[in-house]
Length: 115
Length: 114
Image (cartoon, rainbow over all chains, first blue to last red; front, side, top):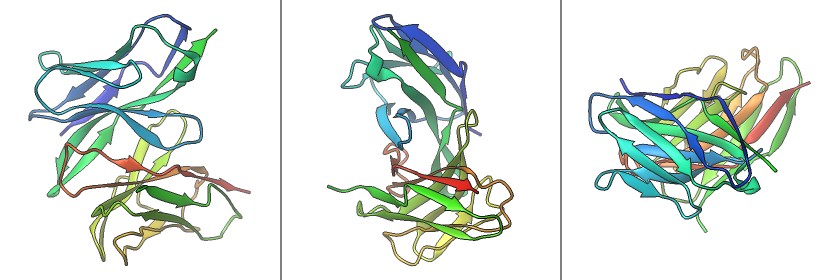
């Protein structure tokens, strides 16, 4: 069965510093991988996703994630963070169960940007 | 613009009361989902529905009930049997069996027991 592990529950960084949020998944089949962002008291918004093809995927706000099949990882990175990036980030993988496809979410990583 | 609307944004429940959280979507999605979010525990699936008049239990269905009488609507009732209902509740929808599509989420309802 597919599962997702986010290795850090909280990541504090200074503004303009680089950041990496780690995500590992377990799956014996081809997967679709996602990163979602949640700002305080809001729902989740899709940040980026990996479906196939190029292993590096990018979002419009400077985040990128690299799919690494051998390490079963999908880490999220940004070379220079801004205060507005303060949020919780969720990694997710598609799970196939009972004839349905569902997303399985990691526990989330809270990113805090300090000035 | 298409999207998912959850209401109310904040809800207060007295002990022993049932409350219903609304979720409406105009995306023409077949599948809808309810998640519960607690600090440090990520998202836990309560119920999901793939077609009208059909739904399945998720990982933490006890103390909750749902209905799917219309494609657009998937209300969640938190019953008095749910012993610890204080949480943030998220509704989502997706295209059925399109794992590459991901989910669209509503903005959530924060339920507090008083």
